[in-house]
Length: 217
Image (cartoon, rainbow, N blue to C red):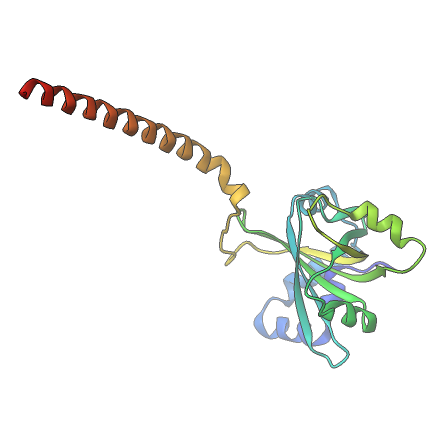
């Protein structure tokens, strides 16, 4: 049975806080309107396809939350269905904290961030891990990226239970080198031209000084 972000996130304790702080009526309407809404639409799918990283939260068997950053080239997160996304899990520091947590409780929360445009997409879902089973090799090859020296250990699928877009307020704009390149490229070109002109002027100055020295003798 499909749910929505609000059905999952708005627990009795959350609703109590919303009532106390005056936002319950607003969110109650949204919760009713989006009941069972767990299918990623075109906007969500395009947003995910353009991201080069996300954050994933899981919970240990002792109740401690843990957040891990996952990154790769844009498109490293695959949309298999409107309610199913997947990515290749690469070998890292071999702590396997998220993996251990997911073996106990497969519920996850994902944050996809677009810092330049101050946009955030939150996804709640259930993780499905494929490492040593019959479908793992095919999934791993499907999820593999062109990153050099990357070792894919498993494929992780996320069954989307619900999602929500966040308000852009308080998201500080940040930019990657790739995002800055279109702006910096003309400046680099101009700087190179100025440096070349500076070299030419120095050469002309040396020539002028040499001619003046010859004239003085």
